[in-house]
Length: 176
Image (spheres, helix red, strand yellow):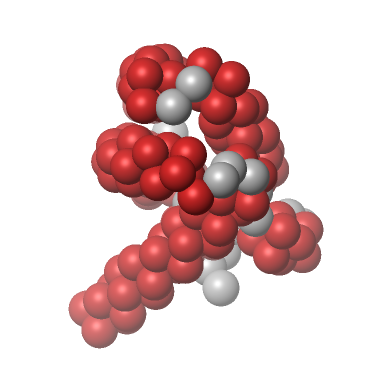
């Protein structure tokens, strides 16, 4: 697996146990030399990424349901908000993927200007993700209770933290 494929897949890995376990084996890999891929390979890579993201989101949903441990009525109200949150989070993660792709594309020849742009985009992504959590804390609290909303933030904090570690550990540092 080349560096770009690895970065794309790991960019959307979450804290589900299978994803974290699989990354341990990939952490030692070095970026492969990048050659232009034929169009068929690009389509296959895009399809693989879509399937990986879908599977990861389903595993994440299962984890959230189990961690929230709500009764049927509470779960129904919670999930109405969670599905909206997940849709908005996916859009944010699309931006994260674009940032990682830009980094992978310029990895061997990154300039100060490009590095600055990537950092600023990454910081904006983090601010937007925090704002999204704040927004849905209020929505979940209104639909259920503040205790359930607080638990939602705890669960998301664990998932996002683990995901950030997995992604960060898989992307090589910029050259000196």
